[in-house]
Length: 554
Image (tube, rainbow, N blue to C red):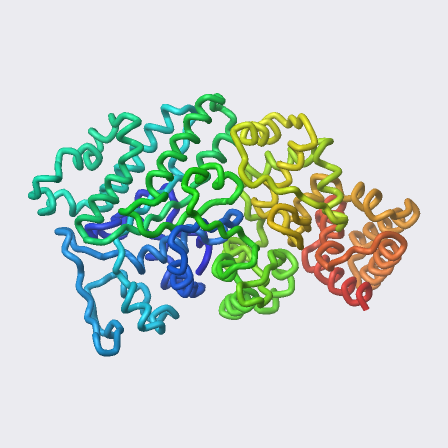
């Protein structure tokens, strides 16, 4: 399963799975791997090891955290409470792990999964890496002092994931000072660390693990850009505090990831736009933006075949066309040139659980975005993209503090000072999944609406009737006929009124600009009906859309 199941563990959960001496906090993958709607993405682990330091970006809720946790559970050296590695039975001649009973809880998580068929890879990499995992979603605050408080907690949590080190024989060697370790391991002492000790903390842990295991560490950083998003959406931090926070993050990531003898590999999750700013000083990172041609897109979100399998398992395969129209649209090609259609995994899992096709952005964030989109400087660009006119975007590769404040002004105060601000906001929306690029270079590409869910959200902001009049060049007479047809449908609800409404829709769109896609046409109709006739049943709307597809596209 990719993406977060609706009742699964959450990043703020204090629930523990089981004390194992290492990584004792909750695990997404522990919970997901045996769920009825699990989707096997384990082959991603092979692809991750082809690059030493990489950042993978996707819009929200495409399974970044779950995939990271899956990789961690596969790669980490699993130890007991005394720090002794849990041995696995191996067949040296066949270079593979034996399929036998084992004390390894991690190994049991992958029984029957695709990755275990790669026997030589499993033999070489399973359980072979010391891991440091940090979650920056907890690094939020109203000012820089609160950021420091929360970063101390993150460091302490990282040290306590390796509690076995407290009783390790490592401290018997003269060159190591256990008191230094305890400054980070003890929550009370850690809470008083100064900035210098905060910046060296994770690197110090990597040094200890490197000496303890005799090998370099694999670093996992989840939600790298959450601190910046908090600055944007809350708009409560001063410019100087923002500057200090970014500098702190830059120093920490540089110390950890740039030419560090203790850290051999790293995986970082984020949305791309502000990750380049945070990682600017760690210039050895390979960036893999979502929907750009590479090996990773098929592992984040669901492919079409995976969606069909899930719907069939749930006994809802007949709903596939509706799901395709609403959630498909993040299209790309993989590194081998094959075409991939990606669905938001959270949305699909939510549908399987509730039967509802819901919007997959958090409500508070979406409300701010809606208000910003309605701004006079931004509205024309959104309308242009909606009407399928090409819109070229000059990509800002490395933003700065002023760009953070620009987005904050747009989203929190509805202020747009100049055209460049509006364009940067469009880039921000694109990386949040509201648009997809169609063609062009990484620095300059063209945007489209990905699916009906996004189209309906934006159409609601712009106003359905206004969209029809302005962007499809429809005459008032035909609009009036369409309105009368809707009234007849709402009043009589029979086959004849559905047929008459279909005829008026066909006439309306053939008289003006023709929609390029089914979802575009259907989104306008959905928004129109929901705005004017909320009591028209979903079944009736579905029947209408099916007939409209048949007549309109033949």
